[in-house]
Length: 138
Ligand code: IDP
Ligand code: MG
Image 1: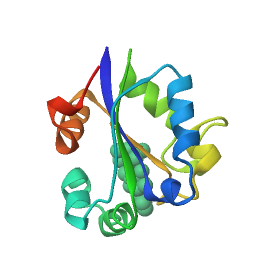
Image 2: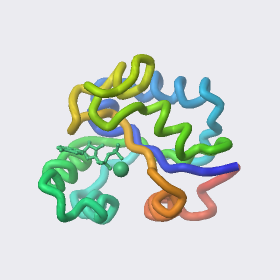
Image 3: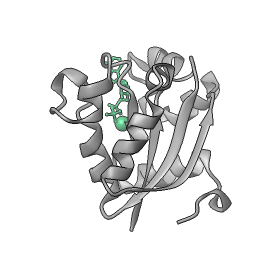
């Protein structure tokens, strides 16, 4: 079983979409093995998105991720990393396929409702950034 890391972003929490997104996650066969609702500091967001620190949108991204509460999740499934990215849809909701979370719920590129790890190494880093081993119960 593979694990991936997911965030329900502030734009989705703000619009009371936590339940609808969790419903899609469970219906797609993921097991939620860790979960917490919290508010990221700007510094938390900068550390989490450090791979993007040279990008022009880094300031905007880390501001938006720390504007309101998020839900942090560890998801388990076979091929969880790619399966969760498929369920989320393309980064820009304009390009996202029908039936994906970003197509159905996202507002725009900066408010695209969900995050997902993109590779095994990033999943390991992202899970350990927010959860300790005692909090992850398969
Ligand atoms: P991902 O979330 O699909 O993995 P990344 O390229 O890793 O996409 O970018 C991280 C996040 O940064 C995106 O989900 C999106 O919210 C935001 N983002 C990406 N590109 C831009 C941009 O050009 N302008 C503003 N925000 C962006
Ligand atoms: Mg990414």
